[in-house]
Amino acid sequence: MLELTEIRVHRIRVARLRALVNVVVDGALVIRGIKVIEGPDRLFLAWPSRPREDGRYEDVVHPVTMEARTQIEEAVLAAYDESGGFEDAGSGARLRPPPTPRFGKAAREIPRS
Picture 1 (spheres, one colour):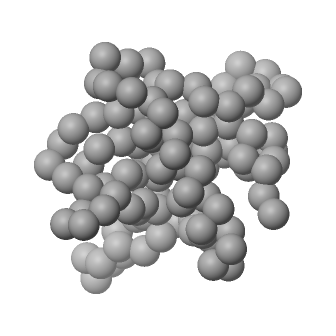
Picture 2 (cartoon, rainbow, N blue to C red):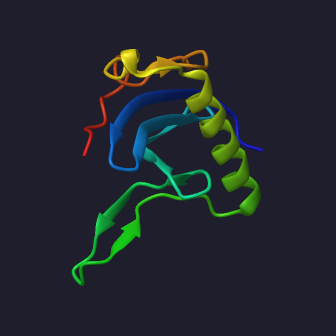
């Protein structure tokens, strides 16, 4: 089981996109750019992706096991629900204690794409 040490939710409203989420795994790995999308029946996650030469997109990072996928989806969607309204859209709601050392200050900042 993964330890999700920090989940940061940046609520936005663009078409069906509801939030961009960054997740720190085991205090050692950050996954930036997970999207919370409003589907016809429920919210779901879209993993960070990049365009291929043929115009299709491929995931840059994604869970390998169903157990990991379910754990991350449930935690991210719970954090989204807890993050409240859109007044914090630029700051990002921190819903877990930050790992030590924190990314971005103690380590090299990973650029956003």
